Image (cartoon, rainbow, N blue to C red; front, top):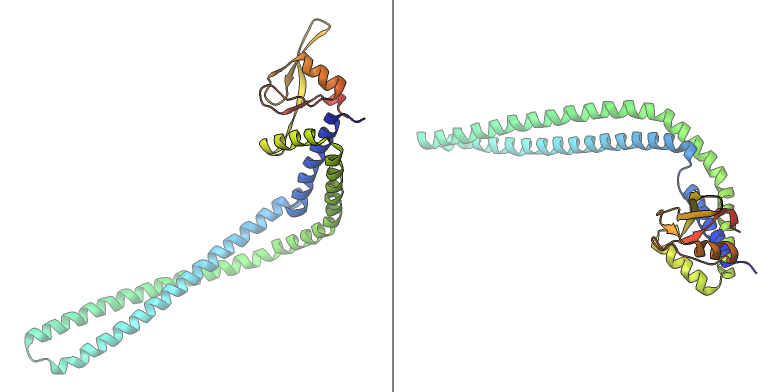
Length: 247
């Protein structure tokens, strides 16, 4: 009869392998990570420039529209000059017209500055797009290579999921429940290896938890070694195992 601890160790390892396989399947492989980061950075730069262009265009159009509105107001004031009845009204009208002219000049400067920013960003974008072609070409080629490898990784995921299902069924319900609660508590890492931390004389050995370094009782080592029992660390509460006697 298989010892519960052996099945727990196998289940933990299978779950860990499954996590790594899923990362490979749904993430970016290590061998193209650097290219992916460069590709993403260049795309982000282009998106920033495109947003800058859109912002400059919008600001220019707004300023130009306001110029047109102000010019219409100026025209209306100019048409009112012939109807002025005294010097006071004439002075007030001229002051309004000067204010509008100042506003028009400021708006025209704003529109021109926005146009210059737009053109600068467009030039920078064209240069970046040209240099991006080479990076994108390499990236697309690596994606094709990665897509060709995905089916084998998907098969590995499927095989691991099947093995995990078998291992879960193999464990007694109480042992499985203990393992799953510990697994959830520690974010997917339920086990801690027991290690020798000191050798006194020729026979006596001192053991410790490989995670928290808390001393492991000799009786716990016996239960793990001889019976394959599920024993928890007295400190960190992970399930203890000894590598050289693991099933």
